[in-house]
Length: 229
Ligand SMILES: CC(C)=CCC/C(C)=C/CC/C(C)=C/CC/C(C)=C/CC/C(C)=C/CC/C(C)=C/CC/C(C)=C/COP(=O)(O)OP(=O)(O)O
Ligand SMILES: O=P(O)(O)OC[C@@H](O)CO
Ligand SMILES: [Mg+2]
Image (tube, rainbow, N blue to C red; front, side, top):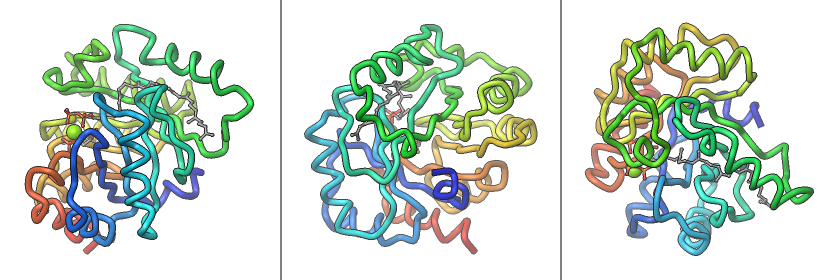
């Protein structure tokens, strides 16, 4: 599974809770992005996830599910990304829901398709920060320390710096990137055009573009070419 995510530089994240027209979905899937990630922090259900997956499956682009709800785990994705929120105030978001999922799914879990992600949530004003009670007041060294726990103590393959909804502090992201040995660094939050995509791509391994797809698709599509030139 690491072989699959290693070369990713660009990912579009689509939210099953948000509608997307066929034409827009076509543009996203044919954009040259490395993968489409399906996920959101609220309103994700089994039905809206199945519906989105079946539409994306008309295309060749890799399609992965970022699991956020036990009730919305749908078979048929290429990979399952499993967020573990390192700076959550409640350990349910670090390992609790995960323990319940493993107990429930047991032997049915295709472990080779699971990719754990060490999430560091840094935008206090985001749904995911509120949901998980994330301790977002971290300086660069504090955030990098979480990243090193994920990378060096927990051997997680991915660290995900999550500024969902706002463009983050790129110096913090650079600092985190430099502190990693083995883990790949994903960055998401507020990337909405070519310029913000280049800035973020400069300081991480993989950029994730979410809300921009729904807010200004034309600009969102420019993020692919911008970082692949
Ligand atoms: C046969 C078969 C396919 C079996 C399935 C195997 C499988 C995948 C088993 C599950 C194993 C497992 C360990 C599952 C974990 C279950 C779980 C519920 C874990 C909790 C995950 C978590 C920490 C969720 C919190 C929210 C979060 C971090 C979501 C990630 C996505 C995110 C941050 C989206 C941004 O949200 P958005 O809505 O876009 O935000 P804005 O409103 O700001 O835009
Ligand atoms: O929606 P945006 O702000 O682009 O963030 C992308 C992604 O990191 C959300 O989980
Ligand atoms: Mg979003």
